[in-house]
Structures are given as C-alpha cells and as structure tokens.
Length: 87
Image (cartoon, rainbow, N blue to C red; front, side, top):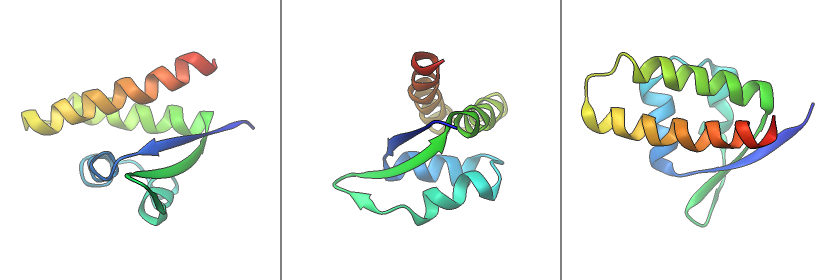
C-alpha cells in the first residue's frame, strides 16, 4: 500500500486526539511523532487517512464548540484535499 507523509501542527494533533473517537491505531503515531520545526511528520496509508478523515467529519457533525468545529473543518479540508489528489 502507498502511504503519504503529512505535516500536522500540535493544534491539529490535539484536535484529533482530544475531540474524535479515532482509534489508537490512527492516533498513536500522532502521539509519538517527532516535531520537525513546527510540524509533526506522520505517515499514513491512504486507507488509514480516509478512515481518519471519517472520524474528523463525524465529530464535526456533533461538536457544539465553535472553535473546535472550525479547527476540525480546516483539518478535514486539508486531509481530504490530500486524499482527492491521490485517488
């Protein structure tokens, strides 16, 4: 399977870990990622990334905190764009 390396900010990492129900197989590498400059570089296979995007979208539909909702929306757009260019 092909994979892609994604640069996550600390804020994006925290949004995923603290506000989604994404399972540990998707979040553990975020938790353990090394910071390169201001980004965490994390590798996902495309099917894993698609799954992660689904968890972000699901939480977006249920969250009431507007700042969290805005952050999830931006993150969804970023990751979904990567998926769309690769498929």
